[in-house]
Amino acid sequence: MQGVTQAETASSPSAIRLIYHGRLANNLFQYCFARILSEALQATLIAAPVSGFPGTGGHDLQDRPSTYDRHIRLVQPWRESRLLLEEAGEALFTTFENLIATLRQRSRGSLITIDGIGAFLNIRFYENHRERMREEWLKIPSRREMHPRDLTVHIRSGDIWWNPATQPPHASYCALPFSFYREVITLENWRRIYVVTEDPADLMAMKLAREYGAEIVSHDVFQDFCFLRESTNVVLAVSTFSWLASYLSKADRIYVPLAGLFHSGVRPDIDLHARDPRYRYITISPRGAFGELFQGIYAPGEPAWSGLPQLRQQLLNM
Image (tube, rainbow, N blue to C red):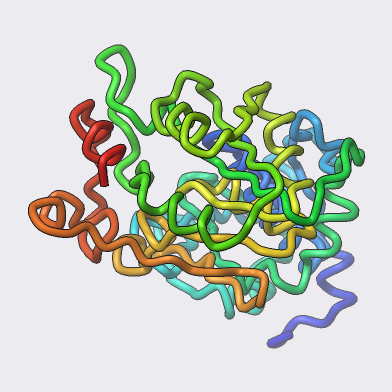
C-alpha cells in the first residue's frame, strides 16, 4: 500500500455501498465486484442480497453517510475501458488493474458508492475469485446431472426485440443467425439438445426444435440460470446471463459468438474473453447484402443493434 498501513486501513471506518442496476446477471456481477473490493480494502459492504443466492446476504444494510469523511462515486462510463472515481467535483480515471491500489490511497474514512451504471465486465478482475464466486457467493443447490454429450443453447429473446410499448432494445445485445447454431450443432453427435429461452414461442427456438428435435426449456429467471449453469456444453447468447452461468459452471465446452458486447470492436470497455481451453470463439460473417446491416453488431463499430421485426426473418434464413 502506498503510504497506508494495513492496520490503518482496518481501523478506519470505510464502506462500499452498492447500487444495483439492470437484471439478474448484471446484479450478480455488481455484487461480486463490490465484494472483491470490500474484502481487499477491509471495508464494510453495504449491499442488499440478490434473490436466490443466499451467499450474497448478511451484509450491513444501514446506510450512514454522516459516519464517513469522504464520499467517492465509482462508475464505468459508456464504452470506456477505464473506471471513473468522482469525489467533491473532481474526477480521476483508473484501470481495473490499478483500481484496488488507487482506492487504498483514498479509502480511509470513505464511503465508496459503486453505481451499477456501467459494465464492470473485465474477466481479469474476477479470475482469481472464480472458485469463491462458484462455491460461496453465488452458490446454488445441485438440481440435476447432465449427460456429457448434451448441448444447451441459450437464446435471448424478449428485450432484444423492438417493442413500441417499451424502451428501445439495448444496442450492444443482438440475436444470432441460424447458421451460427447450425455450425455448433453439426460439430458433434449430441445426445440431446436443450434450448433455454425466456420466450418459448421465439422463432429461432422453434426452428431449432423442428430441425434438431431440441427441447425448449423456459422457466423463471433463476431456474433458467441454474439450468445453464449445470449444463455440460453450452452455446451462449450475446448475454451476460448465459456468460456468467457458464463461467461458474463445470461445462466441458462453451461456445461464444463474437458479436455485440462479446466483440471488442463493438464494446471496447468489456473484456469477457476467457483464457480457458473450455471456450470456443466463433466469428459471424454475414455475406452479401447482409454484411452492411450488421456493422456494429458482428463487425467493429458503434453498437448498432435495433431489434427491428424484419431482422427476425433475415436471421432465420442466414
